Picture 1: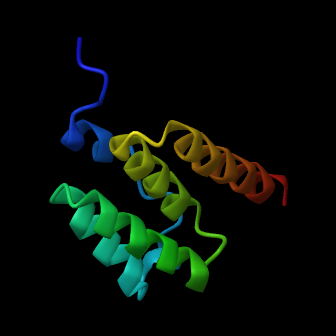
Picture 2 (picture 1 turned 180 degrees about the vertical axis):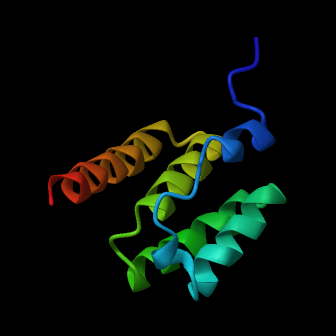
Picture 3 (picture 1 turned 135 degrees about the vertical axis):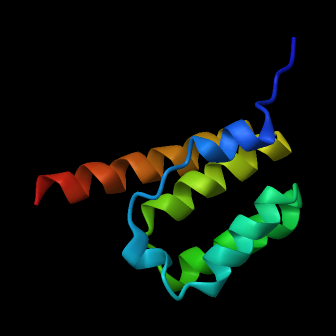
Length: 94
């Protein structure tokens, strides 16, 4: 049984939640492109840099979680998904 999700399936799960954060974010776009190529460690660094610039980007936290998952960093993936969830809850409360 395969323990990791198919890469294309993984990124099809991540829909665009907050496109205003992603427009003009070169690091996010770089992370997305690297992820699609399976260049996980490079994508990880790009997403981390994206979060340094835009710390409230829910989509970046989701993508970061998927990258951590692909790398086998399950605890870090859960943390990234949890942060995305908390940010999403906060944006719904307004």
